[in-house]
Amino acid sequence: MDGSSTRKTGLAALAIAAVLFAGILAALLATHWGLDWRAAIALAAPMSALAQGIAWSARYPCRTNPLGRREPWRIALTHITAALVLSYLWVGIGRILAEWIDSGFGLPHTYKQFLAMQTHLYAVGFCYYLLGVAFHYMVFAQKASQEAQERALESVARAREAELSALKAQINPHFLYNSLNSISALTSIDPTRAREMCPEGGWIRLSATRHADRLSVSVENSWDPEAGSSRRNGVGLKNVQRRLEARYGNAANLQAQAEDDVFRVRLVFPAETEERK
Image (tube, rainbow, N blue to C red):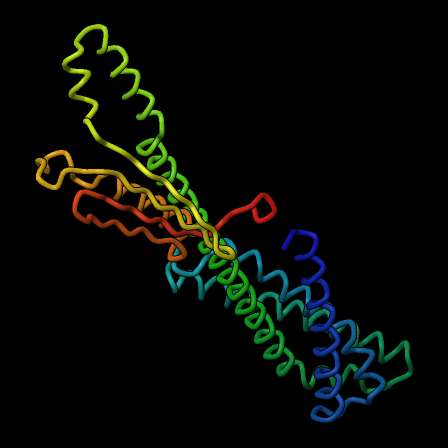
């Protein structure tokens, strides 16, 4: 979600909260504290708008006092002090509005009734500010969790790319060309050694088949089961297996087996086309 969408969502939530709080405050002023309904609505509307500003201002002390990074007593002291000061200002502005409604709208006793219930309004303003504190801490925690998930996914993607790069370097087909070049050079320098590098009677067979969205590649070559095993340590096959897992996960597999004088490797993985890429 970009910054513009976040701001629009925040403003919409603020407007909804203002309407709901104005309705609840007007109902309390009229039903519980005996204020005239007209005076209650006229007083609740601007006080609700002011209360949203007070609750939104809690964002800044929440940001400068993150949970887990400051001492709990320091966080509590900061927010309690802010709640006391802002609720005092909120009730003070309400008192001015009540006096203005009393004299300007012809609704007598509004100011006197407001003075009688201002202690309750202090509590309302105090609690509403703390509600804003809880809301902002929840938003910050959710944002931090999303950022942590994004960093984790990015780290996994980078690790996979690094592993693929390393495996590509290990399984680069240039080793075949280098071997052929070495044999070619030895034919003019040491024919006997060149002959040793080319086993007689060796062969290799490759085949590939596709079934729906699966590609099967089979590689067979001749081998001598009685030859020494010092050079057959399986590093190449392990690297191929790791590369398949890094690229396709559980969707690919590798099977290797030896039968008599034939060594066979079968690779099965998803078939990719330009459209799928």
